[in-house]
Image 1 (tube, rainbow, N blue to C red):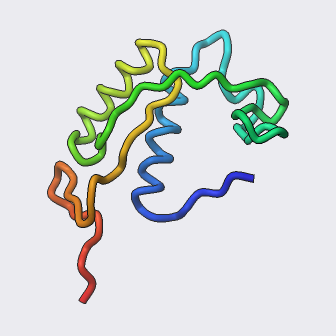
Image 2 (cartoon, rainbow, N blue to C red; image 1 turned 90 degrees about the horizontal axis):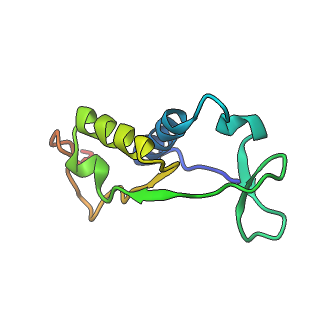
Length: 111
């Protein structure tokens, strides 16, 4: 079973992946028709819950949350989907603390 951390950056990453999955779904073949993704029985690839292999065609949007605002990120994801990518790999932060395009820190100080 794949588990996901609950940090703010992890939720952002999950939202971006979900958005990209939705954007790339064609009318003929929706990605969720084969069920959620899981690690294969031999631990060598990703597959759907029905055993159908998942073909990972990824684009790389390094530091996307840090360098792009929401409108720019949405445009980038739409372009990636239009270009046929079904995954966007991103590097969430480059160091701590890191600041996004709105100036919010990745690790705010707590007093």
